[in-house]
Length: 127
Image (cartoon, rainbow, N blue to C red; front, side):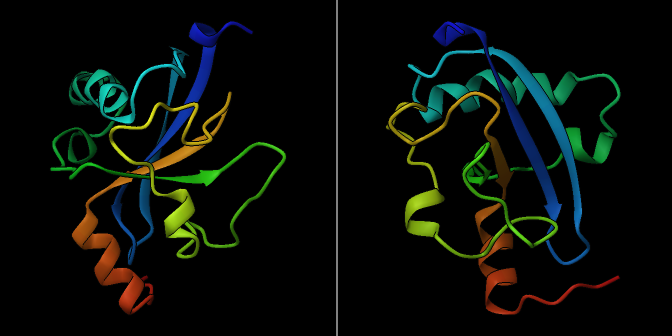
């Protein structure tokens, strides 16, 4: 697999409490781009993607992205996303995807920082 032929899974998270998320697949992703460049690549796609409900397309995601599943390495028992390991798993804007530990078929969560901080302080579901 060449660096430009990788597949990445983005988990768009609208609500941690209500476990409201949608997975989206992006193909031909280069691991040599920065996290910020990757976000700028897929953000316009989300706004116009067919099959994605309008609430997910129009949600005001604040740029915070966290690895939720690395193929063959770890998975979380949390339905939406693990609340542990922020220092290792939250991707930094200026890092390349490769330097951040992202590989082919890595799943990352995309959400609002304030929603995550609020949920992490009181991780209760509302459903």
